[in-house]
Image 1 (cartoon, rainbow, N blue to C red):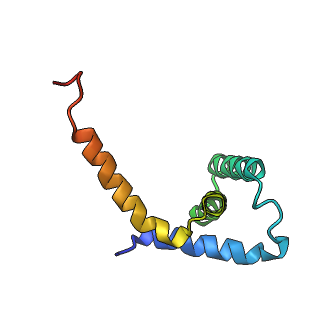
Image 2 (tube, rainbow, N blue to C red):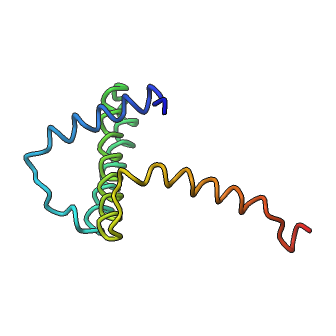
Length: 111
């Protein structure tokens, strides 16, 4: 699969931010409420960065923080379900195709 340049840039920034924060450990990564609150805090920082006329790289770094918390949430979901996150990407394409199939099926309202 070809990865879009903007996805690659975000993923690289996500990894940089994870490496910078490794010293914080994994405390809270199994707590849904904690993760959701931190994701909201990070999203608020993105909004502040836009309001402060921050540079594009500063905003990208804040977006990477949001994306990392989204990743932690996805990892928690996988941990709870017993799935492996690296297998879910391909499954998502299958799910999307199935949803499209469902949308194309006629309903009583459209017949």
